[in-house]
Each structure stands twice: as structure tokens, then as C-alpha cells.
Length: 317
Image 1: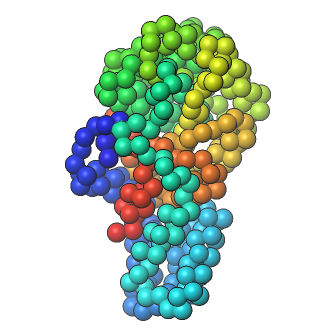
Image 2: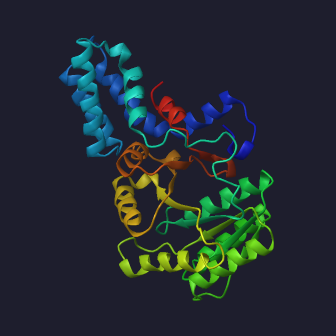
Image 3: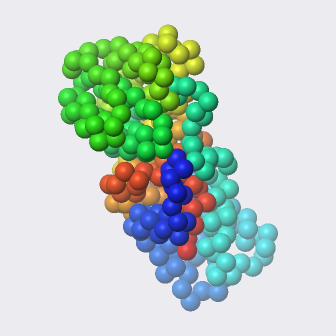
């Protein structure tokens, strides 16, 4: 589907998603297809092959075990499962495990009745955080929303410079200060400017430091508290950006960030370049935080709203 009301042919959208997930599809679907070749029933050998395929695609041990247990229960209940039914069964069982039944609004993934809608974006360096912010801002602007960006990663010059390039490309305003400034001060100024300019959305970039630095995580709390001096219920969304190509390291980052701050949604990037896209399934299941966006390419519209049904179907068909 098109993001924020961008109309696009359904078949074209499905083709783009399938192309973006091609490496993961080969890792999961083709491994399973090879494993069941010549077999007529889902037996222990087939289940072992499915388990190996899921683990190799970084679905994660706990989620993989849960999937296998669900399949075993289906076998026990139905007494006999033909391997030709396997893809349908896998789709059904994995779909039931994924967090969020209402993640996708056909045109707006945020509650824009709150104005300005404040999004704080977190994540370590290198995951595609600033690029995700830029793509999100560009698509919001394209849909008619007035957007303000806040460059609160004041410890890395490249982050501010990159965000400025995206702001210029998207045609949105950016609020920034000198390098080394207090990030909370930038966040405060950004939210205040968004209110004054009657913006629809303000997106705050934060420093992408290592997730195991407890003191630096406390900075996120400070940023939240300062923004609430302007808008009492800010931020309305805390979006954690994870690099899908890092596999299990994404689990560790999600674990630490969800402990350190109230993460409300996830964006998983770089899925087009990896066979580890199964991490999307594991993270959604284990952390019970909805995935709102996935990145499957370099272009602006390659940041897409995550639709769990379309995602699973693209892997198992």
C-alpha cells in the first residue's frame, strides 16, 4: 500500500515488497521447499528443517520454538498434515504470533488529531535512523502535512549535516543548534517552534550511542521531560529504529531500548540487503511492540508501512 495515502497499484506494491525481501525469502521459503521435497506428510524431519530455516533467518530461538510447537499442535490435532498445506499453515501460525492487529491505517499510521504530533526517534548509530527520519518527513510532507525536524543528536556533526540535507530535500524546516549543545534544549526549541508554526508533526532525532550506556539512556528521559513543558503528553510516539541486517544484535538493542524508554513502535531498516529478515517476526513476537515501518531500499518510498499479512505472504508464496 502507499504510505500516507499515496496511491499505488496493489500488484506493484506487492512486487516491490517481494523484491525487497528476496534474500530473506530464499533463506526461509526455499530452504523449507527443499526440505519437504518428496515428502507427503509433515513429520519430525520436516519440522527440524523448518526450525533450521527459521533460526538461520534470525527469527530467534524463542520465537522459532513457539512456531514449531504450534505446528506440532496442528499435526497432533489434525492427525495428518500434507506438506502441500505447509505454507498456508505457516502463514496462519506466524500471523497469529505477530504483535498488533491494527497497526496499519490505510493512509495515516499516526493519530494526527494531536497537533503537533511529536515523534522521538531512537536507535544506535548506523541503523539508518537519520535516513528513516528523512524518508518519513518527505512522505509526510508529500501527503500535505507540515513537518518540523529537530536535530537533537548534537554529538555527531554528520548526523546534523545529514538531517539538514534531508530537510532541504523534503522541503521541511529543521531546528538545530551548535555542536555539543544540550540535546534536550534542541528538542525543547523544536517542539516550541512546531507549536508556533502550527505544524502537524515534529520529529526529534536523538543521539545514536551504544545502547549499554545507562547514563546516556537517561538523556532520553531528560528529553522527554523537557518536551512535556511545551506539550504535556509528548512524545506521542517513541520510534526505535533497528537494522534488520544485524540479526540477533537487533534483539539486544530492542531489549535495552525497551527497558530504557517507553518504545511505542519499531522501524526495521535494510531488509533488502539481508537474509536475516526473519528478525522482524522474532522482535514483533518477543517484545510485543508493533512494527510500524520497514525499509526495503534506498528510495524515499522504500520506507513502507508494515502490514504483517503482506509481509508474511511475501515470504511464503
